Image (cartoon, rainbow, N blue to C red):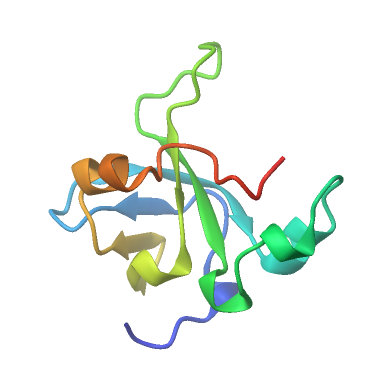
Length: 109
């Protein structure tokens, strides 16, 4: 992975999987510092700085009125390229589901 400048990542950017398929848009860019400031967080449960930022991605076609969140939490290590308003990741939608990245990480309240 090339050097990633976390300042390049922002809400509204499009996330594209390894097959070139748009997954959705960035809803939140989570830094370790921001996570540590959340209520009821135990620092020992939060991954190291090298895992951050995490992208909270609202999946394409998700409607906020549904009860089940349809999105992903993607760690820094999966980001391969940032170009303009697009973020490319190393896996496919199926890979993300198999890795459990469609579930909120245990360190988040």
